[in-house]
Image (tube, rainbow, N blue to C red; front, side):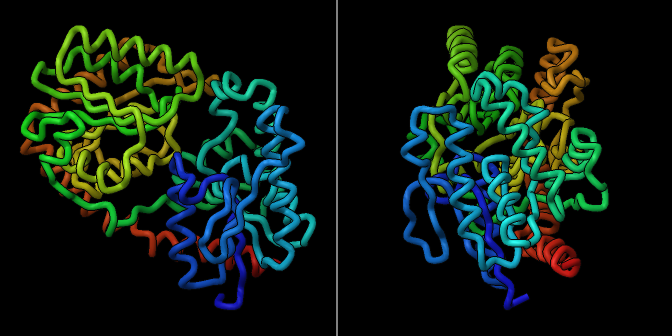
Length: 399
């Protein structure tokens, strides 16, 4: 496929990366360039990288709903894909651009499903009426796509449940990957001490945005029951809404009044610093109620941290219970929110499993080493690129 040109369409791309989709596109573009011609089309300010085009929101739409501003970017992106052989879009922000480009230029459109709007109804708090628009853009793109790449088998089942009109044969599973060179164990007690972390004490580490799907309020409630010598390290990104920000802030302040060792890092750390934090973690906690796969779990595993995650979505495809970490059972509402039917029971189970793992540091280290081995065997980016190319070939062969 050396003469083929693939246009990757995305909202996030370095230096403007704030979630798993941005990490995915950055690494996918890097490995695909060894095999095909790649153009990246991304939202945001101008970038100096060759083969990357940036798109700002139209000035005339500055005061309208954010979803409409997104559509303005999508129109410009779609127009610029004229010479591509295939377009590959990531998240609803760029799905409409991919769909329109496919129609306009008569080329296949491949969608990577990193999340699903019907399973994130809390986004109505964030987007208002724009949530109806984001949902429409996603469903339109999925129904029209030549192929849909699900980042886990759990995600594939969610796609077919949310969009039953989609032909199951068009939905392929290609897991997210991990850069095993840049993500590795880097123990540095002095560096983490500057962040307020005592490398000699056991710790539970959380990394993620303050959003409903990440389940941070459940972890904060569970932390009340952790052994008194355990540190809770929270590396958090910007909140989705003022409401979730206020809820989390109140829980953190209450927890700090009742126990020591709550380390609050209100920013997303650079990769090197985050590796250092993950490398001293006894346990990495992923209390998500919605997680198609969870790149952050792979990052923790690459740094040899044992992972305790919710048994939902794609997490069980990454975390092998009793081998690379532990899974916390959850019985969830089927209304799209993922809310535990028994929130108190879920919090109690989360606290119990975290306590079991953090109280046995030797076993946790064994799980961490097994996690690194699993990442190397199953989740390298070269392996992910090979599987993605197979999807491209299958749809280009249909033209």
